[in-house]
Length: 126
Image (cartoon, rainbow, N blue to C red; front, side):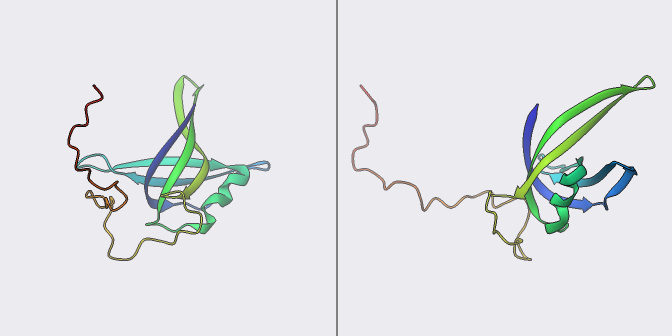
């Protein structure tokens, strides 16, 4: 199952070598959810641990991830396995948001790309 979510990098942990052939790196994303933002922990494994090297805490990113679940000793575990991380907005060369910018983004979007208003107010198709 593949999912995507946008948010602000709240915390980036160092890569941990779990065994001789397995490494993992965790990070926490602050996801806006009404009045109470959610802090959601993700995991990157193996060669994907380096995906976080170009980001800093506070950067706005979009994370593509899979849900992973399993049973271990009678307990059920769930991991959010990140496989792609990109700057929010999808621009590869986008720089970090200016220091004064608030998160989440401005709730009043810029409508300069909207088509010009028409003199004909009859927009019904019949």
